[in-house]
Amino acid sequence: MIYHDLIAIKEKELAARKKIVLRCCMAAGCMSSDAKGVKEQLVKAVAEAGLQDQVEVRGVGCMKLCCEGPLVQADPQNSLYIKVTAGNAPSIVAALKGGKANAAQTDPDAAFFKQQFSIVLANSGVVDPERIESYITADGYQALHEVLHEMTPKDVVEAMVKSGLRGRGGAGFPTGLKWGTVAKSPGARKYVICNADEGDPGAFMDRSVLESDPHSVLEGMAIAAYAVGADQGFIYVRAEYPLAISHLQIAIKQAKQHGLLGAGIFESPFNFNIDIRIGAGAFVCGEETALMASVEGKRGTPRPRPPFPAESGLFGCPTLLNNVETFANVPAIYRKGAEWFAGIGTEKSKGTKVFALAGKIKNTGLIEVPMGTPLRVIVEEMGGGAPDGGTIKAVQTGGPSGGCIPSQHLDTPVDYESLGKLGSIMGSGGMIVMDDSTNMVEIARFFMEFCMDESCGKCIPCRAGTVQMHNLLDKIANRQATARDLAKLEELCDMVKNTSLCGLGQTAPNPTLSTLRFFRNEYEALLQPDPFGPRGSGAANQPELATK
Picture (tube, rainbow, N blue to C red):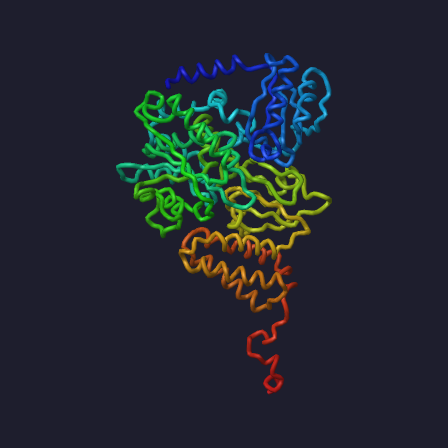
């Protein structure tokens, strides 16, 4: 493809655009509530009303307010319909001509939407993820063209460093530094991998991006590949995401057909291909070395580092590995400028972060906010607070690797450093809200059970430690434990955290440690008296020894 072809596609698409667009959410959440039937009936109703020349029914990705799906928005009327059924379709179309829809509506300017700042989700719910023309109309692939024709690979890396983007997979490692390391590493071949193995309970950010805007990830990977000198990319996505996989397959095929993947992209010497690798759902394969082993066809278990993947990764070659959200940020950074991106967020945490808001909260769904946004704004203003008159007790961030932040710390800004001080992490973006009915010991036990089940078993601290910690949490929850068991639990948490091979074991104790830090009284309320006394001397059961 040449640049003029890109412009021609955009102009043709804009010229064919109709006066009114009915955007129907076709993401996985809404599809589970018959969004397909809703779209079909909307198309039928438009035809029956004779409005085919004026109205476009467009299937789009996630429209963010997942708890109210299926969602349909009419533009330019700015009418957002919620919990839409196929039977509502005729009245929604009639409302375009002055009638009244029999579907419930919500305010598209409510706090949930108004306080979002969309970069990663800018096209989500707007473009048709199955049509590359829709993405191109939203300035898609312009950044790739500019990078290939106006910047050297070194310039691209320097711009990424300047942007301040940190990896959105959880660790928050500076993206530019990682790109620069791979670029400098010697090797006849290099690889780029997108980690789409999203496994945190309650997290669905990466899945939604792939379902809603797959081309942004492909474009981001291509720019990264040019920067580091790679010609082959892989997207590692879990098999539980069939819609995301389908949209990726369509997007890759379309990009190849238009010359945006393959050889001589935009008439440059740059060649780049992307293949999909489907994971079997092992949580540990979210860890980069385990993921690469799985891509190679081996058992997905981590290996010690160094060497780091940037020096010796996939098939022993230098490998750049970032997650879905990181790559989805890339096109906007090069289209709008590194300084623009660096001006968003905080001093050390630049840009925005996407969260999957779930749990005991009124508005569940996807949100994207600038780094540094207080937790209170997210859960009380955007999320609407706890349902049924309850009060928020805690917010869990970072999934099984994160921690529980109590309500007294809701004014904490959401950035890497602030969350770390409270014993939690940003993680990939799961955010689970708990109300005053939540048992924090049960929460710790749930996440420990998850980590225990998902441990690959390679290292003893994680394999055996998570089992023992779960047994102790189970004992406490069943009112069978003593203060000695609680002390043993804390010792085990420290041991597993500091001796496990990979991030799964190293962070598995976090939910337990954070709940012990802020909700210790709930643990102590379940403890039984120690029959052997505080030091285990047995004196409490031997009066003759106790009196001597």
